[in-house]
Image 1 (cartoon, helix red, strand yellow):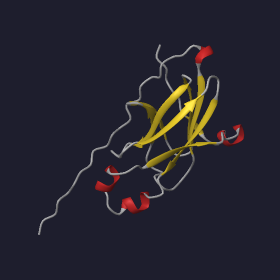
Image 2 (cartoon, rainbow, N blue to C red; image 1 turned 90 degrees about the vertical axis):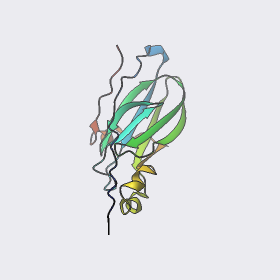
Image 3 (cartoon, helix red, strand yellow; image 1 turned 180 degrees about the horizontal axis):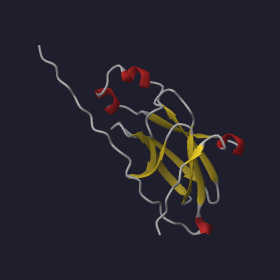
Length: 148
């Protein structure tokens, strides 16, 4: 009787700087991740296109200055899963908030590791009401870098 061990590689975040924009042509994107037991020990990598912009741990957030336009954002884990895609339009000088949250199906996927994690999304993304300053004060702020 033989056993086959399947090893899954991780997909670590390769964070890249965002393009620096003129102050007159930018919008603000606040991306946050609340505390949750589900996927609590795994970073959520947020970005757009093929670029990882920031890695969010549990109960953290980042503020990004982006161009006003239609964007296709993604969130994924560092566990070689499929990115969850989310399309949003950000208007000139608008502040838009996005909430990163663990996929409720993660508990079922955990029983079939490691193959099941590669077949689905560990994290999901949705537009949300912006948290108050008092709530954000309880979160850790992640630094986002910009090209020079």
